[in-house]
Length: 208
Image (tube, rainbow, N blue to C red):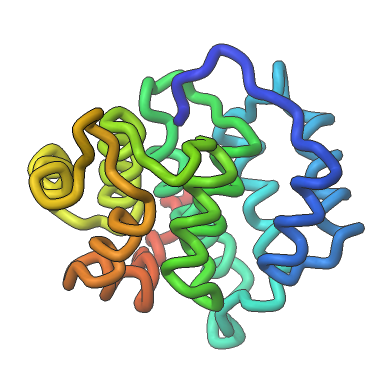
């Protein structure tokens, strides 16, 4: 994730699936995707536009947290801080651009209304078709991205070795069911799935 020179388009069927999964009306999701297409280059989005589109997506989400206690300025700074955490996590090669796939991947992982199993399976099935098995490369990458997104300080290489030792087949693949069950029952990740990402509201920028 975050290491492509060019992204890809998102099909109508994929938008249907995302809309049904997270509860965002199809036409609103379509508008967000069109906005993404309009401002992106080669299906890649820079950090400034990513912040804006993330804010729009959160406004349309029926499961967005209750932020009525925040001022408009505080809410903007919170959305920007969350968008920056997502961007930093998935921009793994520091290219300064993300794909729509990566954007939606992060949104699904953060959608607390969905069970951890649904979130993990969506991520693994939708963006890395694997026929029910996880390769070492994909496994390590997903573990690292989840750790960075949720702020979990862990050795992702060691976690993958634990999975390999207990579940890997002779060809080095780990069954997807074993992968998802491992993290659903892991204390740190289980807590993160249900509590979400905790991002403090940054202070206002100093006035010049």
